[in-house]
Image 1 (cartoon, rainbow, N blue to C red):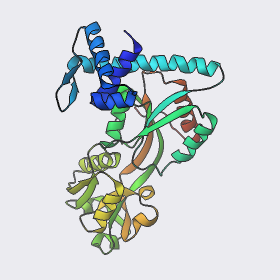
Image 2: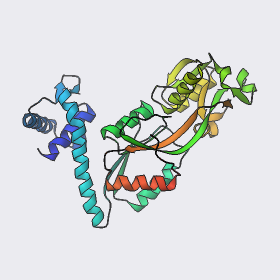
Image 3: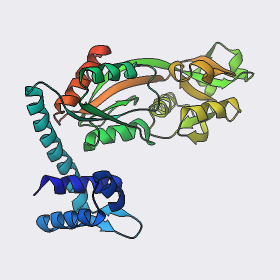
Image 4: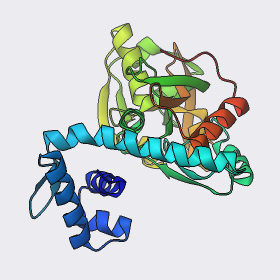
Length: 301
C-alpha cells in the first residue's frame, strides 16, 4: 500500500468530492480516480459510493479513514523527528477555533510560535457545529488540537485543559424590564424568550445544562451561527441572550444592557488534544507554548 494512495483517499473523504480533492492535491481528476480504484482493489472493498451529485464513504471507507489518518500522522511525525534532529521543526499543524477567542491572547501566542518556527504551517479552521464539532475533529485526526468551550463532560479519547473562564452575562435591549436590575436571579428568567447559538456551541451547552439542572425552561426564539447576528437580534427585541463580556467588547455592546445573573452559566476556553495519539513535533511545540502562556489546571476528565 502506497502512502500517496492513502493521502488521496483522505483528501476525497474530507472534501466529499473527487473534483475538489483533485484541486486540493494538484492532480487531474482521472489520476485521482485511478489511485482510489487501485487502493480499493488492494484492500478488496469499495471505499466510496459515487453518484453524480455526491461522494460518500462506505462502511469500509469510514473504517479506513481513522486508520489512514493515523498512518499519515505517524509518517509526518517521523519526518518531523528527523527535521528536529537536524535543527529545525517543520510540518503542518491543524487547529480548531471557536468563532471568538478574546478571552485568551491566541493571536499573540501564534505570533510567537511563528517567529520561533517559521517553517511550520498553521492551518486554522472553524466549525458551524461549534465546540462539539471541533472535538470530533480532534478525535478523528483531522485536527491536531482545538480550542473549545464545552462545559463538559468531554467524550473519551481527548485530554482537556482549562485555559480561562468567565461568567456569562444576560444581554437584553436597553429599556427591557430586566435591564433595570443590576443582578437577576436565574429563576426570574423562567419562560423567557432567547436568541441562542446552535446546539454544539459551548455557550449554548452551558446555558442548557444550568436551566436543566435548576428545572427552569426557556424559549429559543431564533438560533444563529455568529455572534454579531445574535447581538443585532437581541438589540432588535427578538429575545435575550447569554453572552460573555469578552464577546461583547467595544461597539458590539452599543444599546445593549449586560446584567449579571445568579447563578450564572460560564464560558470556558479549553485546549483539547487527542489522548491516545502522539502529536507531531510541530503540534507538540504549539501545545507546550499554549500551556506555558496560559495557566492550565489539571486536565478535565
